Length: 144
Image (cartoon, rainbow, N blue to C red):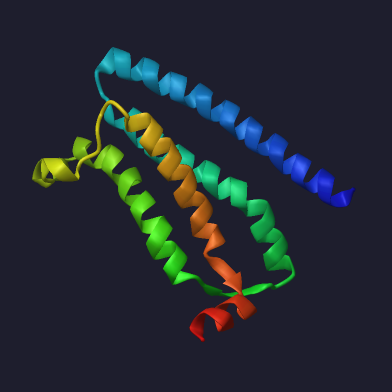
């Protein structure tokens, strides 16, 4: 029962943060319509899903941290899943910066599917970032 309440409280907190995020995004979109400045919205679309993915893994991460179940970092998982998803997150806002002009066009993501790619990749990156911390027995098994 205690575990249920713990996860239910986290779920309510995440739902509240999603609600606050949609309110903030609506304000950013309204400001973008008035000022024609797209960078704040694109940056929000890139960063907010990372925070959501981070929050989705945080309850279990805190329980593992409390029990001291992990000691290492799973570089293979981070490099295989985290870095490609980070690439898509960064490519959502990088073309809107001064560095964007130097990026070859084949490396940029499609603007038509920008939000879908950014949200999915951001949630995956935020989750994998915390999930890459692993238990010592997992670390020993992977090195053998």
